[in-house]
Image (cartoon, rainbow, N blue to C red):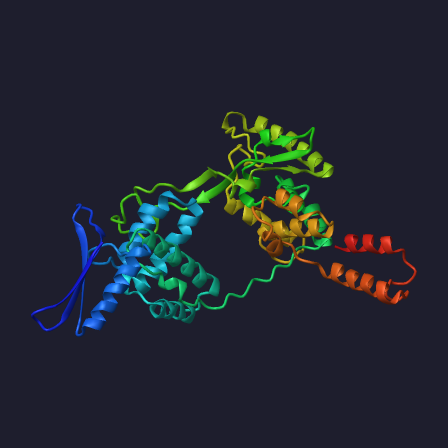
Length: 415
């Protein structure tokens, strides 16, 4: 591919570089100009470097950020990501990115423009987590623009989002978990929360359980699917004038939906404690009585946890039941997902190997352990006592005349 450099009749130096072929089959020749020959040579060399490195921008005027984000969201992301992920992208694009950056051309968008948007969002009182999600959304959209030749560099990779403080997670203690289980036991579908605390299933995984997934003989659960509530989408390309997709006369894609597990590692078989399996068997018997009472109103979805008519449980109603359960058990307010953190922490306390923990929790990589497993204070102080006993071998460090093994058991019991 050749390049030409010449001095024009206008007194300026010009360069033309063949970058490839246009959509119509004609050569894609790019033009640059400068006051001096040396300057135009530099521009030509830069074009050639971009071409050889595969960073060539497509010919024609660059799209605006708004046009590209609209195209990426509706024609690329919508068909390639999970509905929950798409809903998050949609919120970031519609609420923050298009209003804040939509007027810029994609090839002229700078890191400073993006950082001003982040500062404005923080100035409105939005959390750093919201800004980070917006940052990740824009990064994904512009990475795709690079792959498709719309731009040659992604300014998001240079922009600095605000510092993100990791939310402090405090797993339930054994005593708190026991209070929750005691209050949940007599409740309808109460065993659902025992599953959360003991096995750490994600909400969608627990609500997506069907009776064919329960093996009473082996005392296992097979995780095959998840149940989620999806956000309704406009079916009219926004022409109805309503902000929410749920209010669109042609809405689609929303409501309860069965989806695949979060990752391939999420498809797994989990061992169930014998006490919990007995509770599940009792729950099944109670559900059979409900089925008789509902008669022809019963909708058989074979759900382990169902409404009185057999229909699947809405995740929103499930979360409201969890909040009410914590209040009744006189346990601090916490996310339902914190029950999953609690289950992971118990596996840590029991010294279950990381590989086995990954299988139980459905993690695809070991780094998740650092996010989910939290060392309780009882374990920390117990370790300190063991170290002291090793170095000083005194009764004070070992907690008196207690047997070391009894001391370790006490730590586990306390947690």
